[in-house]
Image (cartoon, rainbow, N blue to C red; front, side):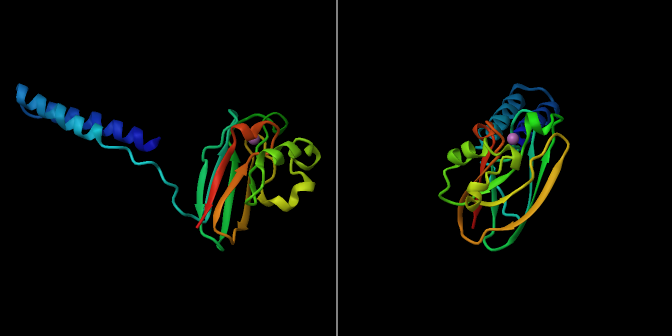
Length: 175
Ligand code: CO
């Protein structure tokens, strides 16, 4: 999103700079337009997550994570901080980060999680499916965890608060 905005700003700045320098002959104005068009036509590269061992994730009052994909290195210790940037209490808009083992049915997990309010929606019966998880957070709170994933592959992460999996889920790519 940021990249798209930057490109848009660039297009405006460029066309302004080109059209404002020198005289206003038709030729120059046409050149400015085509220059702007060239910049506009450039495809916006998809934003690929960079590999990192320090991950920052946010959850908000609109039931959204701000990131849906992370890339980490296999066998390397990773620190993840989840921050709830909203103001709602955790009973109403609780957020966590639950990293699931490959092969876990995340919807079945989330269903079990709904019954685990007493354990912050981490179902004890499914603990074998959990690689790592944060605390359940309310607005303004944050939690930092450290974990290591040894096997390469793509892993699901979810917020296990009831109903949140529909909006709050993402992929952790281990390379
Ligand atoms: Co949530």
